[in-house]
Each structure stands twice: as C-alpha cells, then as structure tokens.
Amino acid sequence: MQKFGDFKLPSFFNYPPYFTTQKIFIINLEDDFPLFSNPAIERSLSYEAREAFMISLVAEGRAEWMDKERRKCLILWHRIQEWADIIHRFAKDNGLEDSVMTVEELRTGVESRGTELHGIDHMVLMRALKLLESKGKLKIFKGTSTDDEGVKFSA
Image 1 (spheres, rainbow, N blue to C red):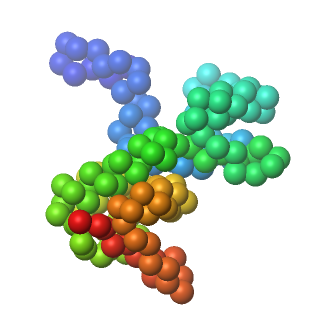
Image 2: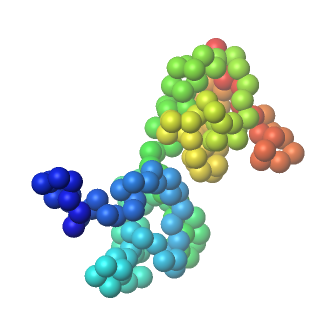
C-alpha cells in the first residue's frame, strides 16, 4: 500500500486500468482478459462464469454476440441509439451541419479527441451512422475501402 503523506492510498490505486481510459469493444471469452482474472490472488473465472457474465450484459442490451458459438462479444458502452445521439450532438456542437467528414476522422481525428467518439469501434460507429441516416440526419458515402467512407451531416 502506498502513502501520500499520512494518507494511505486505496488498493485500487495500483490497478493499471485505474490510470487508463478503457476503449474495449470486443471481448473474446477464450482470451486472457484482465476483467476475468486477478494474478495477485491467483484466481480467474471459469469459462462458464465468463459466459454467464457476458450473457447478463447481452440480456441488458449492453453487449451482442458476434458469432453463433457465443465466444466473442461486442461491448456496447452506449446503446446504438445513444451513440447516434452522441454523434448528432457532436456534429451540432462543432458546427458540422452541412459538412463532410470521413468516418475515420470521426473515430480518430483531431475534432473527436477528448470525446467519447475518439477510438469508437468501427462497427458500432457505422451502426449509429446508419441509424442517423435512416432518420435523415446525415448521408453516408461509400468509398472503395473503409478509409474512404464519409458522412455529410444534414443542416
């Protein structure tokens, strides 16, 4: 346990994710994943316990199975509608109505730094953009590769 003057820092202070913004969108139940094990006490969850945890997230609408074997899960930090709202608010707050951006700029560009959009999983982003497109709030432009995809926000 570390101390800061006379104050004793809590045990979670030494846990590396405490100092890291986690942008984990895909969890494979067969991989070694920090959430499922604790080396300090030499314990880890069984496959069945990992699966039960993910089943619970899926039931709550916070994750979706990515394969029929239920080995890989897409984590939804926000539901797709919530991501769509975040994107729409981002466009309004940054004066992007009637502007064009690449999908990659939304995910990793200067404009998205410091926002929840920065580093968003491409699949999650595309689902939210398609939802906004179906509501007439933007238009998606397809390119020859994922780097060429773009969006034009509606005014």
